[in-house]
Length: 124
Image 1 (spheres, rainbow, N blue to C red):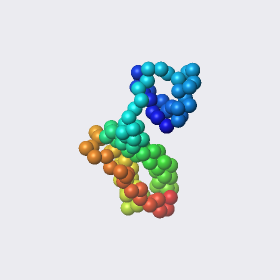
Image 2 (image 1 turned 180 degrees about the vertical axis):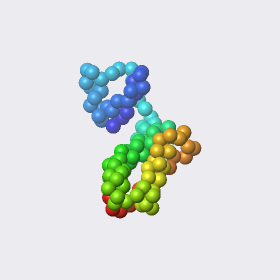
Image 3 (image 1 turned 90 degrees about the vertical axis):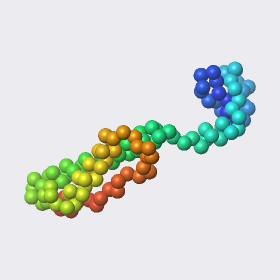
């Protein structure tokens, strides 16, 4: 397999040379050196890309936990628990930490993990 780059920067796999025999094969492309191909295969995201992915995971965790918070509100309304119960406060604090990820500027080093999700609140 060889990787070629056309004048627009689009990469093409020559499928072991077979693609070069096709009439649709773009001409005027440049064969990338093996080192560049290897670097592309080991692509390391930029800090901005890594931060965007981290924020996406935080947003997804918030969305998944919305139902739990609705159940907390319902349980409080029914008198089964209170907003000041330790497990409810811990859960809400965790959600606040996720929201902080969405609101802050990219840090110098992007964390590999999100804050640890606490246990499901009792009496919910």
